[in-house]
Image (cartoon, rainbow over all chains, first blue to last red; front, side, top):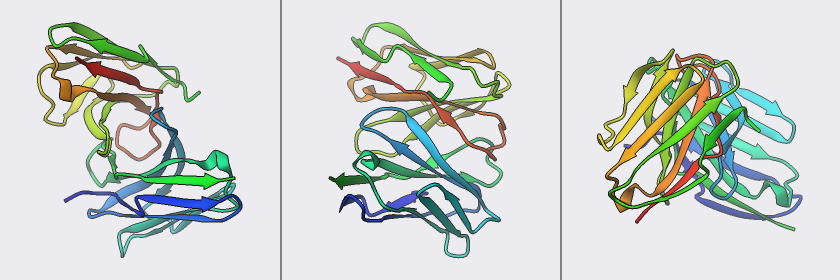
Length: 112
Length: 114
């Protein structure tokens, strides 16, 4: 079974709209991280939320974590064309050192 | 710029070649990682090094041989690869090897095996 499954796999919106991406996982975690990747390049870290946190904000980004449902969501408000990218959630399983387990990602397309 | 650099950025090699990928982090971190990203698949963790010691080998074939001479440098030596090994290889580092903090990624090496 796969840890860190994102939903939807692809999302297309207009500039100015909000984008919501969801992530589900299966095991206990230390933290959950969201990353962004532009077309075949390196990953850029967006937000880390720890298992004892429920919500975090960073600029136009809002991340929630529900450990009882083993799920997280990433909300991007007032989206811009430059937000077009793939977004990945990654879970750091409890007691497994530095291991990060990534999902398949959500491809976000923001049309001007 | 994340503070993690990778060279080369692109590499094309034949199945009988030997090549090496290099990663360097300028962040003073203690842990370094190799990931493989194939088309239509999630990133796969390959190796983890904490304080220069390998702590994770995620069932990676022996044709991939990592080397970590110090906490700032990580290499991936490649030999007799297969076409299915073509992928983006990403290096990352983190301060805490226990997995409690952010991993910072390099730009990746796009590898094509002919």
